Every structure is written in C-alpha cells, then in structure tokens.
Length: 150
Image 1: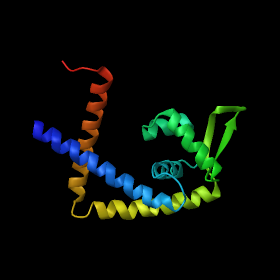
Image 2: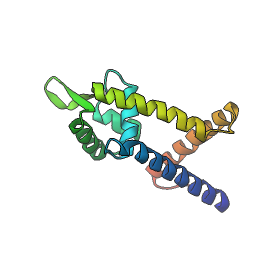
Image 3: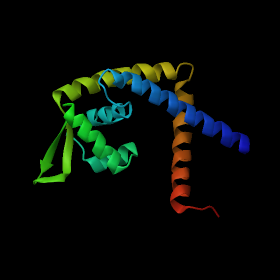
Image 4: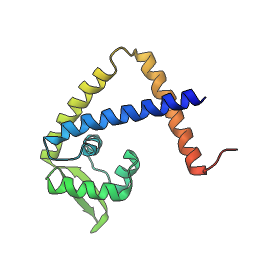
C-alpha cells in the first residue's frame, strides 16, 4: 500500500509540475502566468461566458485566485466582464477578440501537447485511466471533506 501511495503521489506531482512548466512557457510570450492558460481554454468552451464562481468551481481554484486572474486578464484585454442587472458579482466573463485569438492558439497547443504526452497509450488504456483517476479524485475529495476515515 505504501508503495502505491508513493508512486501515485510522485507521479501526480510530476505530471502537475511538468504541465505547469509547459503552461508557463506557453504563457510567457503573453507575460502571463501559466495557470491563466487553463482559464482562457475554459472560457473558450463557454461562448456565452461564465461567472467567476463558475470558473472557480470548474478549475478548482479559490475565488480570490480567480478574481486576481480575471483582473489581470482584463487589464491585458483578453477578457471582459458583462454585468447582469448592474451586479458585477454575477458578471459573466467573456473572451475579447484578442482573448479568443489567444485561447484558440492555446487550444491548438494543448491538443498537440496532450497527444504527444499520450504517445504509446491506447484509447482503451486512456479511457480506463481517466475513469480510475476520476474515481480516485472523487474519493479523495470525499475523504478530505469528511476529515476522517472509519
């Protein structure tokens, strides 16, 4: 069991570290943090925009981080907020024309990188992997929320 724990922890950490490094390299040309690539790609899938709360939930990042990121992306003319009923809290975040251009570029890069990273993995193996990882993630979320095991 301990061997599985170590292998899982190290591999997840390593995947995260390399993904963050790649994202940072991609975003460096825009003078932005690598994490912002995730936000731009996510926004590109929501043409009607999403709220900061929704982006927080989708990305599993806290609302303060999302607020800071949206402000930076707004200052860089990549996103805009569309207030609903003069309520900026529930404003929809939309890509600007420039944001759409950058997001489309990033989506293309993501596709290439994911395909390269998946080299040697069959479709069936990938399906099983994502199913297992999703189950593990949900179980760990429940354990961390409950705070203890039986």
